[in-house]
Structure formats: structure tokens, C-alpha cells
View: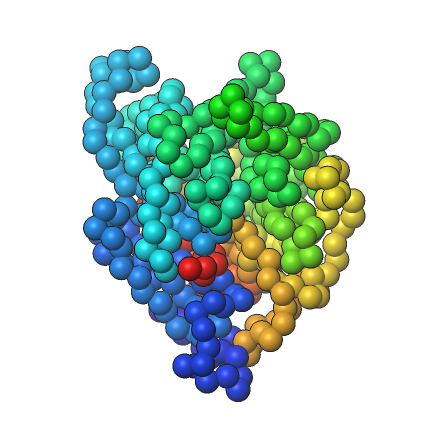
Length: 454
């Protein structure tokens, strides 16, 4: 409702001069998949072109599931399956059973459904993630495990399906698995034990699976075999040579808030309307809230400035060190990451190194999301109120934090903190307009941009 009411003023009611009934359902602009939970019997999509909400019923087999990814007109629906017991990977929890998760591809327009291998076939990663979440967080949210689902084709029967998933680690680098329809299990990309390869955004481009990584300096190509005669070429693309500021800037806003600039750069892969491969970096500023003890509050400003001058520019790891945080900055209770801007870069035609910085997207709009495939659309015949050279962005990431207290129980000590940013960035001026406020609520689903296709 917030989004719809705001758009009535900012976007308008659709293309001027085109009667509502004469417009077909195949829009140029994607639909926004709205938040939902396991109790919902239908899915709702916000239509930017018409400023209206479309509702599609969930098939019976998918009831109880939620959408965790959007790619090429398909939703990846995750639904809790049977409880399973695995003595090999969950032994430290006394062999307690954990819930399996079934994954389906669902086209909400045609009603087509395809089942993918369950997440329990991602052993040992799935077992480790679930048991750690249950033990440390008091519950498991599948949206935190699934990073991205990417299809090589809009036709799943001809497609290779790639899954980037997360690990329950502070230095989570992610991992990668692939399958085809009909496969019984996911094929996991073999990680080298002596290397720490990072898996960020993924995108099928010109037949290759491109993977962004911030821990490599040069393009790396790997051939991954699903079967003896079925293989996919995976290209790891570095983002380390993009124009990023490597130094942290910490500003003490007041006694309980620190602002950390250049804290996080979230990279996205997008194929432009002209067939170019683009890397888009979302710049984030971190607001760190903390409680200081009475001794800390009595320290004067001179002591604070002296501490800051002693910090190293690259002291990010010590900033997160639990003992240092408690001693130097108080107990940090929550972090809020706020999008402060975007940078756009064009990658070489063979998915190689970055060629140039892109200053304008004059003839296209880009729709970014961490909940699915980001898309680019032509800036032609736009509905009233929508401008060209803009980036529409949606975030889904859940952030964890720990609040220490001797009086609280374990399940109350570890809390989930939600930091979501959604809005429009006008690249020419750099102005960011947030369409609706972020809120501290854990969602089991992911919102994303859905491209209607029958």
C-alpha cells in the first residue's frame, strides 16, 4: 500500500493516451514481487506501467512455500519438506532431524511448475547451515541460505540452473551448484582447498556462467562437467580493479552511533539492452549503533580523536573483533547499511576485464535486486513519471548481530536485524529517492523484479 500510494504521485497511472483495456500483459517494465509468507495462498505483483497490483493464486502443491528468487519470468519457490536425519553432518546436534527444503520453478502466468533437487542434496553445506541457524539463531530461514538462482534460458527444459548459496560463517564467501531439470541432486562446484574464492552475483551471458568475485585479480575460466557430455564454462570476473575507495572512514556521529563510509560495495551483473555486460557497484554507508558504559561516556572528545588517529586505514577486521569492539567502542547492537550511490562499469566483450566507467544510461533503465536476476529495459514510451537514466533497486539481505548480556538467555542474545533499502537512484544528479521505508522485520521471502512472460 505504501509503494502503491507513493507511486500514484511519483509515477502516475500508466502510459498516457493508451486505454487500460488495450494494453497487453506483456509489459516492458518488470513487476515488483511483493512480500508474502508461508500462509499466503496467492502472490501479488506491483505493475509499474499501470500502477496496479496483479494477484496470482498459488497452486496447491506450492502452498506453504515462499518465493526466494526471480529469474527470466520464473519464481524459485522454497517449501519445507520432510524432516531428515543425517548422522554424518549433524552429529554435533545429537542427530536431531532437520527440515529438508523442496525447490520448484513456478511461472505465475502460465501456471507451469518444475521441481528441482532438494537442498538436502547440497551436503554438507545445507546441513551445516541449518543446524547452525537452529543452534545459534533459534530457527532456520531458507531465504538466508539461497543467494541466487539463475537460469541460462527462459525455457527451463533447455536450461542449466545455477544456485549460489551461503555458508554459516563470518567470512561467508558463498558457493555454487548447478543442475538440469530431472537431476536428482545438485552438482557442487569443487572449491580448491588452498584458495578462498568468493562467489558474489552470477549471470549467464553469451552461454557462459559469469561469477563476480572480489578476491581475484584476473579473469579465471573453469570448465565444470555436470555429466560426461554436459559441461558449462564458468568465468570468474574480478571487481577489485573497479574504482573503489579501499580506505574506511569512521565518523563519530554521537555517543552511540558511528558512521562507517566505504564500508561495503555490493556488486551486481546486468546485461544491457545493447547486449553489453555491466558491473554495477552499490555503495553503502554503515550506521553502527552501540551502548557505551559509563566510563566511556565520561571520556572527553580529545580521547576519542586520539583513538581515531591511531586506527589503521585497513583496520576492518579489528573493528569486527568481538574483544576490541567491547573494549574500545562498546557493545554494538545493530548495524544499518544505507545505499549512498552507484557506479556502472562495462566489461569486455569476452567477459574479461573492466573496459570503462559508464557515466550515463540515457537510453535504458536498470532494475537491480539481490532477490533475483537484475534486468535492463529500453527507456522508450515510459509511463508518466518514470525517468530514464535511473536505477531502481531492491535489497533483501538480512544482517545478524549479537547483543551480549549476562541476564539474557542464548536465544535472546542472538538477534536478527533487517536492513533493506529500496528506491530509485537518478544517475545524472546522484539523488536517491526511497519509495518506502526500511523496517526491522525478518521476511521469509525475497522481493524482486519479475519480467512477465507466458
